[in-house]
Image (tube, rainbow, N blue to C red; front, side):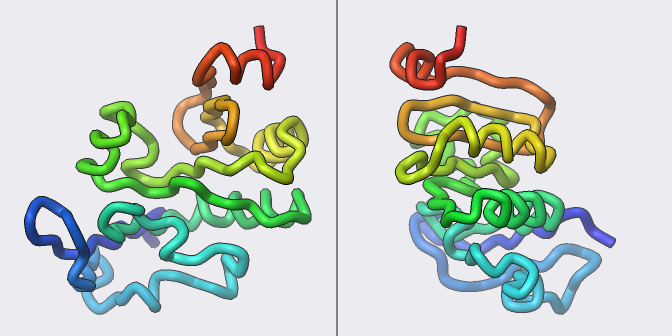
Length: 161
């Protein structure tokens, strides 16, 4: 069983827009996007919401999505995902780290209407290990355990030292 499935859309002109072609993994030759995305398993999220905002490329990682769904259930409130997966071109364009977890799957969650401390604590309880603290969003991922602070304003907002 695969731990993740990368959904790629074929691109023209250096990944400017998708044409809607699915490139399956070796083990899942006949798998389509609708087969890979499980709306009953992740009812509060959509493939489009987690896909690259630039080109529509997606990365389905069931372990990550299960934890994200559990986080949503724990919060009992919608989670607005600002960024999930990013293609390499989009990641470079937005100034993402060269080895960013967004190249697989991460989530930048808008803090509006959420208690940021409750969100952080619930994300930790649900097994997220990478945390980026920003003034308008919280970055979470399943990479190596680490944290960083996006700015001095974020440091004050999150009361981190």
